[in-house]
Image (cartoon, rainbow, N blue to C red; front, side):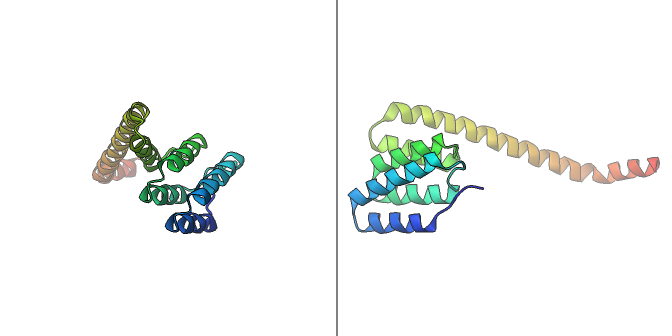
Length: 140
């Protein structure tokens, strides 16, 4: 199960809301060390929250540093990848952002296709279920 830390979130919130950029950078460094030392990735909820806090205060360098390490730890959710790409764009790093977004679009399309296929199969199964049940009764 991914790790979550409400205390860490509160520390980030306080530092960014008080414009203590040295403290924000220090918290990012400490968080990256923890990400690297933990066997499990950070929870997606906490990752999105920390990245959002940093983005709202335009801390794109810290955002990039944190997101890069979240991705390397195995937390590759689409929101984290999108936030990472946005931080790169906001720093003028267009080429890596473009490549990342191309991968995100491909991954999102595949996931949508998979969900669509699963939904279609489930719908077909529900539709065919009475016929399947009748067929099974003949073998009992």
